[in-house]
Length: 321
Image (cartoon, rainbow, N blue to C red; front, side):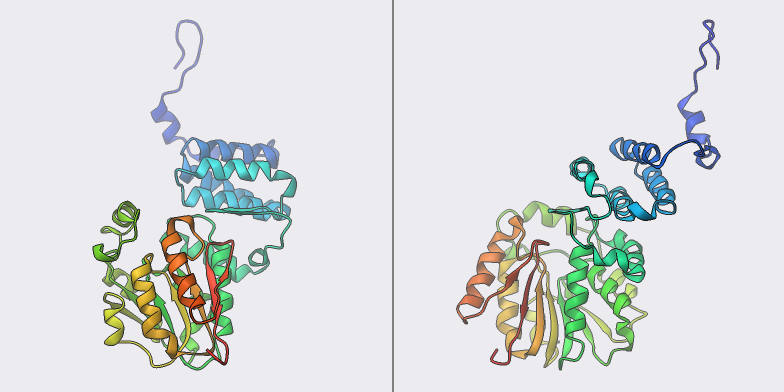
């Protein structure tokens, strides 16, 4: 519309109706397009930012990691998203090796998952199941641990499943459906029981787990895997009813010290020599109560958990236990 001064204005509805695909990018540089996508991300236009980052992925092979990181932020927006974007901007001199996720930034490091097309594809495919962006390093730990335990006697277990993101990724990536093992998944599917809540977890428990997932949803998600069993129940009580006699791999993600220590009491002797435990929350500040309890539990047995900058902890059981 042109007013009496000759100035043309465009109504917001007209902008919304305009097809993005009609916009011509031929005269824009990659940096200019990246700036546009970043602007959309900072403005909260996450869907548009994802589309533009997606287009950039196809033409920026040398900056693949940078674009993937930014697209990951757009696909899982959080209150901290502008901070993550600022970190990526600060790490521009290290394009190709910069990585930013929740509580973790690395640069000048090899990013092995970006050299593994199957890994990268599955991370993107399952990202919607986890409300945290760019979980590559954490999933790398899980994939390594599961592969290490492939030929260790016993089954696999996950305590604390949420929507099934971690196991679904690993099972897809490793082709677990063809392994002669069973993967047992345990969760209340109603959040952390009130009498097991650690201090400070009342709010996160309600926001993250209150009515956001269900047993039926997760059970159906694993239907393609005949050797994955989804069990609804409270830990540790459910373990007395349904649990494997031998364990090769255990992923501990119950988000509270009471249940995780009780699970260690019930299951540790069943873990075979060479078996691996990954503690999802061992090095997160929000999970310090878990950290201290588990550190003390292992120390009492002359053992240690390896702390990782991903927030995880890893323990490999030796021949002597």
